[in-house]
Amino acid sequence: MRIGIRREDKNQWEARVPLIPDHIRDLRNRFAVEFFIQPSTIRAFSDEEFKNAGAVVQEDLSNCDIVFAVKEIPVEFFLPDKKYVFFSHTIKGQSYNMPLLKRMVDLNTTLIDYEKIVDDRGRRLVFFGRFAGIAGMIDSFWALGSRLTNEGHHTIFNSLKQALSYPSLEAVKDAYRKQGKQLTAEGLPETLTPLICGFSGYGNVSRGAQEMFDIFPFIELKPEELVEFYRKGKYSNRHLYKVVFKEKHLVKPKDSTAEFNLQDYYNHPEKYESKFEQYLPCLSVLINAIYWDTMYPKLVTRKYLKERCESGAGLPLKVIGDITCDIDGSIECNMSETDSGNPVYVYDPIKEDIQYGTEGNGPVVLAVDNLPCELPKESSTVFSTVLKDFIPELVRTDFSLDFDKVNLPAELKKATILYNGEFTPDFEYMWDFIKNTDKLPKWQAPKEQAEPKSN
Image (cartoon, rainbow, N blue to C red; front, side, top):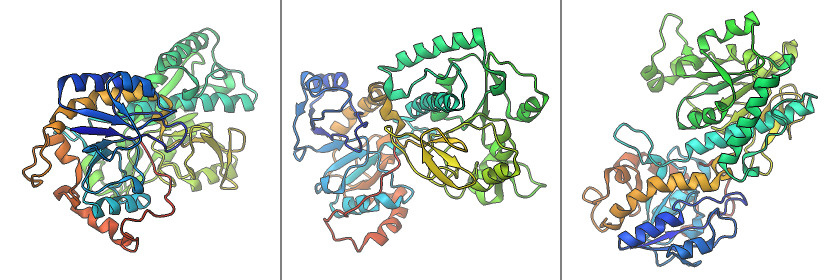
């Protein structure tokens, strides 16, 4: 089998790979597989490293049976009857990727999506979520330091940098340990105390963010005790505080006589409304790490932020690290995705507009849509460590068989959205998504494609 690896080119910071050189070397030594990879000048691993691992570095991947990528693949890249494995961002009918999906159908291709590779309990197996959380927390600390500097405060956060400015993740952790000791010795200004960071969500993304936060000395509070704790005013300025919010803390039933039920919330989100605003007057930083779709209530609304500012009550909220990064989504003041070169803007609740940077009236919003690319070597290595174990079974797969008989491992079969141009049973609903693209000429790429939300 010939496996191709496409060059990532979404932007100048996208340096990740799905399979790293060491794992390619091991797979070539053990199985009947050849690897071909497109050249790149920005990848975290050099062309020479891939050559030394036995891969062929060349532009043309047309001779490959399966092509792997990380990000979405441009529509003009696809070839008839080929197999592709990547984050497609299509399962919710994302409009910006419907031309991509339509083209794959037209060309009778097979699409396996990393996002749907799960175990028997529905837990994702191949993901960058932890590194999205890690980079999101690093960048949020950097944004906090910049904002506080603009306000005239000198704190332990002033010297912290954006994730991509450190040579490695371990270098970040070393810097945080040093600043953590300084926090213990010197404390924060009383005017910034208590500095409370809220985490919405508790999955891989949230745990990654907390992994970095927890390097600093901190005290954890329960959501149920947050408001009363803040009201009493007995704080430590030599600790940070953190609060982790689960679904039961974010929403409540609209029926005041009903009790919160997690499964009922998932099944009938229209019966629930947000109760998160009660916590916002206590938070200095909010890290948003939940899965969100349009049927769910919003956590931070523009209306609430405007009312607080107009009333003179204000908020201690300095930074919102919106790792979820849904535009006009759970964080309604997230009005535009950003990139690693220009990662933050200030949302002005009165004017209801944004100004890039960390100066201005209102919270700083971090809205980078592919944060793991800021730690490309570490995130690629962990991703590849899981993905490589599926390669031997892919090598043995007979894709000429009907889908119900194809010998794909169960995890990959469940993640197969398209099989030879047909939607598989779990994804037949997606036919409706491409109906509106019927006016697109077959085989022709659309002239414009919106920037996708990414992993």
